Image (cartoon, rainbow, N blue to C red; front, top):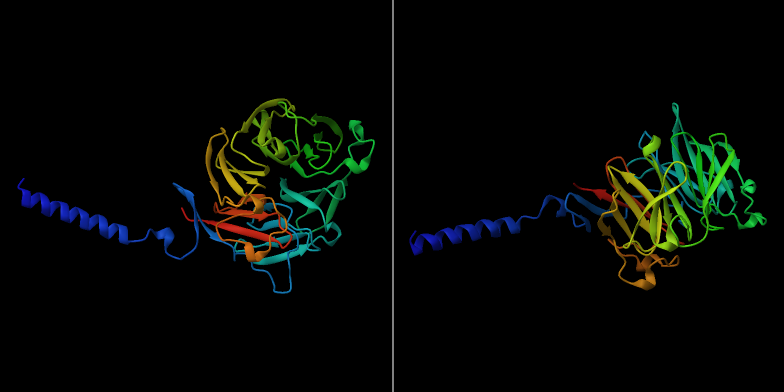
Length: 337
């Protein structure tokens, strides 16, 4: 090929590349902050929550649940203890004035053709079962049968998980650091863990997830101050852990073999069930703003979290994140591809 032809060919190629570079990708044409890696890309949507002007969130110190109709439930410390949204972020309902000041996590469980919410309330020292429309079914208090609570005030549950056999696992995350197991009729069975940093021990067992079914199922514990997730078999025996890249994991959700971890120290993480870190999102660069409940809205930045406390995938694969914040902060990361 002649020199002239080579020059012309190079010019054509450069022109094509330049043209492609000038065309923004379809997920970057609306000005929103984008986060993610590879085929998991998201747009920051801080204005997604659509509440009446007179309704304030108050302190957000809880988590999320989604029902089979696509409605989203999340908790606050206000008189609107449970807020119910449609899939687009619009208000459907709110209830739970009697629960104000301590609903720390929500677990939704389908039982026959009905769905129920299980609420861990650290201030009351109780776990509650509620209908989706806010009717209390039962409450469960201090596990005195365990022999570990001479002082009932030391019991401060932070999470509950319902196993596929209907049994309950309850984390005493703000109390003595045990995870308690009850059968489906709420009869006490056993306690696992206890304070420490060895395999199977906990320093703030903050969040729980029941993952899978039958013998293959596992209880996953967000062992916050040991900076790890721990996995337990259905009989309560320790199996393995994920550690090395988590700061202060608070809660866990799962979708498609991926774990979504809310990390109080300023970010969320997507981790394979196999333990492989896929990526972190929204990492707060200022350590002074991480895990800080009092950061004022004037200091909030799009694309950056403060103190993620609860996180969940919705049905479309978007991410819902609640920062622990006195002013109330709930964000959606809209799935783009």
